[in-house]
Amino acid sequence: MIPWREPIALLAVVLTTFGGIKIAAASFPETETANIKPTSEPSFSELQGNWQLAQVLVGQCRAAKQRIFVYTQRSIYSPTIRTIAPNEVVTLADSGSDGWIAIRSPVVGYVQTNELKACQQQVTPPQASNPPRSNPSSNPSSNPSSRSCRLVAYKDEEVEGLVIRSEPNRSSRRVSGVLPGERVILKNIPLPLVRDSEGRSWAEITVPAAGWISLGYPGSDSVNLTPCP
Image 1 (cartoon, rainbow, N blue to C red):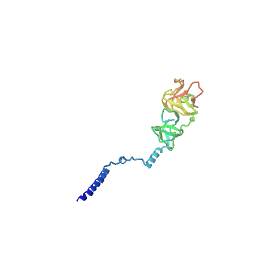
Image 2: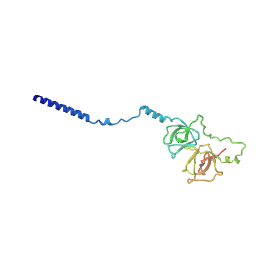
Image 3: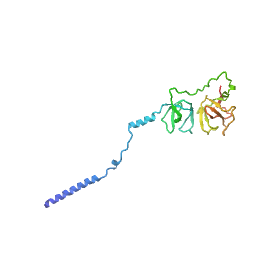
Image 4: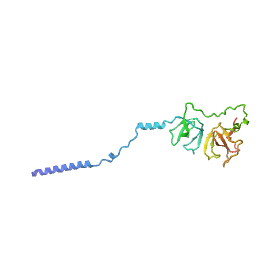
């Protein structure tokens, strides 16, 4: 039996070694990559659907609920470009954000989303600049509304029309606006002299909205209002 001891001992050492390797391999922790849970990424169809959702409003028609302002930025403190008449149609230029939406017609700018409504099949066009025909039998001098009627004559290269404000100064809140050729009704005739700290004169009106509009600087060549025919 002595000659067999050395081979048996050698075999035991080999088995022990391989067994240890197997155990070590079995107890070796999984790699870090295997433990990381794969993150779910949106599929191409999901990305395409989101893009289509964002673009669905572009080019659509909307109408103004009332007379609104078009701003150069998404802020009421940014300069105004012009006003949009009630029921006047605009064309959307983006999907909107933060309560604002871009338009590309009739001018390029931004309006507040809650001031727009869906377009109807027959949208009432903006008020024509031509005044309605007067009754020939009426005497304009005896009609108080005729004497207090004025047409907007102010037109600037950058801004059309006049802003209607809550108080007779430029820092007061904007109420509405009027375009060149549109009518306003003065609250008081004759006009009381009301000037702000800059020397600009103001007139209080009741139509198309209650507020104040600028008459410009007394003595200057610019004319903001003219009598109605």
